[in-house]
Length: 245
Image (cartoon, rainbow, N blue to C red; front, side):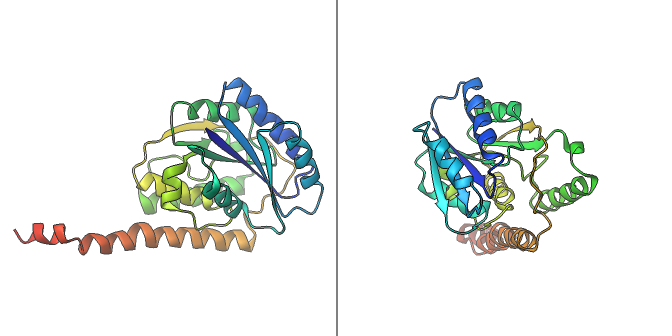
């Protein structure tokens, strides 16, 4: 069973097309067990109205309302903690991921519990965004020794392990944080290349709340995966007894 979280903040012009593409991808990938949860993250436009109209057409589509903006990480985590599915993914409500890419992601989920992705057409983004993405990815990969090409793409996550490692990020860094924790935990993964398409929305990557969330997510990961694990290692009775032999 795959839970598909669709995050939406003021996406009245995109949410219908986004969900329509997801439904087409489900059919093309021949996905049987699934549900869609549209998370209206405090929208002030007609996103909620449109989302509920969409949900009324299919019993497998649900709407989760948030009175104020919480951030994609927070809304994703709320669904993660509540779901009884075995896998979960988060797709943007701005329809920025192509139909072929969503289909590829769903098809891979049938064979692999944990699927990571990287963007195959990075050159479709503005040059500054490409540079920023490479620096961002390089910092995470270098700090934690990650073997993947990209750590902030759309992924299929195993629910049990994701609940176990937990998420601290409330905004866009949640994907990097969760992917990093699962990779460091040696959860088997399969990486694919996806293609993005243009969207009508503006990127919020340079907004202060996004930057502060990235710093928080990275710092918490560092403390959890490096400092905490280091102290556990040096205080391990088996390690100490082994060194005395």
